[in-house]
Image 1 (cartoon, helix red, strand yellow):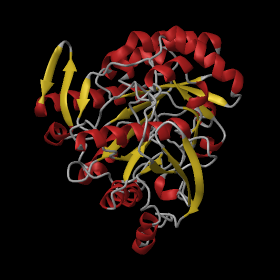
Image 2 (tube, one colour):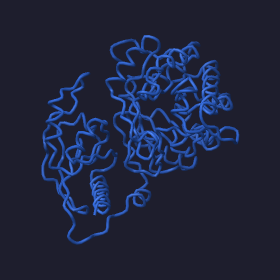
Image 3 (cartoon, rainbow, N blue to C red):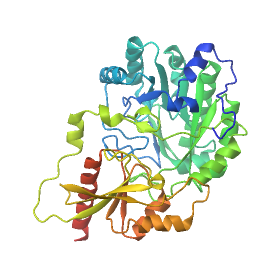
Image 4 (spheres, rainbow, N blue to C red):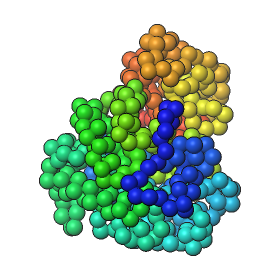
Length: 429
């Protein structure tokens, strides 16, 4: 990563077995992300804290971000799905539980899932993601289960900052708000990380960087979690989720994220290849194949057919797609959009339109290129992409173009966009 030595380290000596497993873990080892696949098992719907940036729409088929999934699985169903995926994906190395709530807030389901899959596939690498509230209680059990890779999200170490990030914390049957609630969470995160690393578990700390709230505090977090024995940190941008308290906040720019990672990598190795995956992600980090293994009955229920209507309005929709089958490209990285025209039920591909990439990967993307990209799509009602930045979304909106983030088939995405447009038309009418 970045041409520097970002080998995962730990304050405690790693056994050869842990080193071998870590080399096949795509989140803990950058080189493994192009070779080995992971599978997130959505068996943990409940959460014990409320983050102001989170809206866990775990019945959402379309979004590609943490906290969403198309289904909730029982431990037995998770095993069945794992077995099916394993047969089709020989490079599957990691089974992770990353929600859509918190793995430890659903401990019985999490533990049972691990036990069942471990019995079926003793070579699988288990990975858990947690907010850390219940780590002091379950750290020893996590170790006994053979889990050696845990991700803990730590957004601050100062309760005064925490009360701006967390709405409330549920702990030991009581609900706590404000700085006091945040202090409980922080104390448990510190104790839990220390306990895990003392028993040889590799801990990755995720940090959601929120400008104006915890951005200047990030280096303090990195320094402290290093002292607790964390192996690396993953500084991630805020992705404003609709319906959340922070839905109108600006998405943290990747330029600012890169600058912060450069500052912090002097202290601790940084993960720079994170894709902020769904809770049911399957496949390589850059190639999510969860759609291939989605329950068709669930998809049918969650994405109902749009009833036919006479005299439908015609829409023109630009789609960021690589193969014409899936909406799977970031808006800023797309140099060719598929342009569809249709009435919400029937769509036809009318052209493949070349555009200048909105962002060419430099720290400072050319503003003129950005304007040209937006102008090239000004005859469209909607742009569909896997991910789009806040500034790009706002520039499109000024041209009267809506943008929707989703991860689905192009066919379903077109219908989803048309349905949204239809609802907006009714409201304005």
